[in-house]
Image (tube, rainbow, N blue to C red; front, side, top):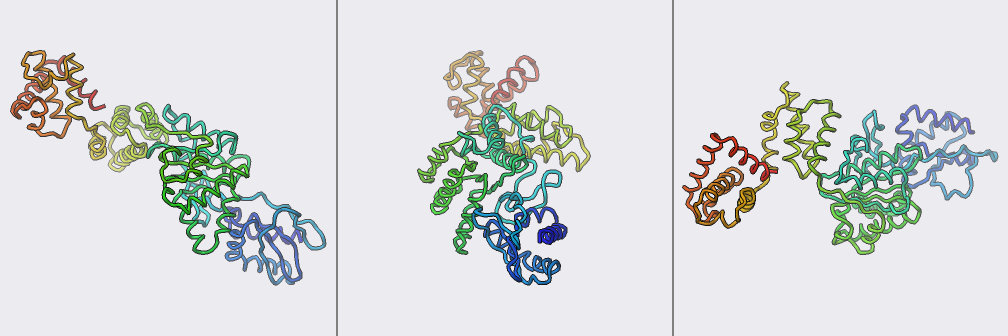
Length: 463
């Protein structure tokens, strides 16, 4: 009987492929033969129902091919491991295979060099193959969060790191670290089951379970994992019933020594609309934030992306992007991709001019909105004047010239009209502003030292 079962499993593997087999069929064990019926065990109702509906007929046909007396195949949920399954005549059943894990039955696809094709499941948000620790660029704003994520990936559920709560603004790397943890655990030497999903997906699956009256299956499935990862927890704000279910799932997994990883746009203490009992539990482990990126980190990210894509991007272009696009790493990467794609499509080199041409909308959207007050303050500081001199009636050369420079900069760095600029400079007429702009333009062309002063002020204001 052991040989029959081994041949049946081998044929199934050949027919459906290694990935499909590992996902749905590897956890099957033979409990025994009962007359004309072969009894097969699976660890969860979810797997039992799936295998029964998709492979039940094929299993019966394969059994009949091996033993014509077998007319039925019964697939049952395995009971708690109180006794080892046995075959007929008291012969020990084959040892159960290591669980393929919920990650394999729930997790999404990955390119061939990194992962197997996508199993048939709608439980999780797809993992990005490019979101690994190797591709995560570390800098001061994210080094602590990165170190915590590494620790959890290497030693899940270690004291002080369960749960791990990652928070930060949009496009700062939370999801990248979440995916990196999932990949590292799944590809580690110790087999662990990982379930990764967004909070939205958690809610929709819970609602579907309520409607289909299969909440016990939902609970059993999630409580069977070793690591549960929920992205964008802020989505559960105001969803009281879903919060209740997540709270109980959270407690059940932590009580079993399982790892929880959560991400959000705010720290637990600031998640208004989340129940106090859940918020306090989220904050009882390790809370790590990802700060806004620095210029150096943005430049490093661009260099890493360009190197990975094997494209040559001039340093000046990278510096332009790192200076202009400051709030969102996704936009930064998207701008680089757009620039490279344009160069490839038209066979043109990447230059500063082409960057301004191709990314004019992106760069314009990220232009710093400088206020007239800020210009006045910066110019007054530079020329060692009082701020009130910018709006006073004084006409001394050491005051009038800096005031003209401030008007010139206000004309070029703000969207204000000439009359509005005049009003901000002591209710002066718009013709006074026009004269100031014209005079400063002439001096820039004539005096290199003066031009350097104005350029320095402009750069300080823009960056």
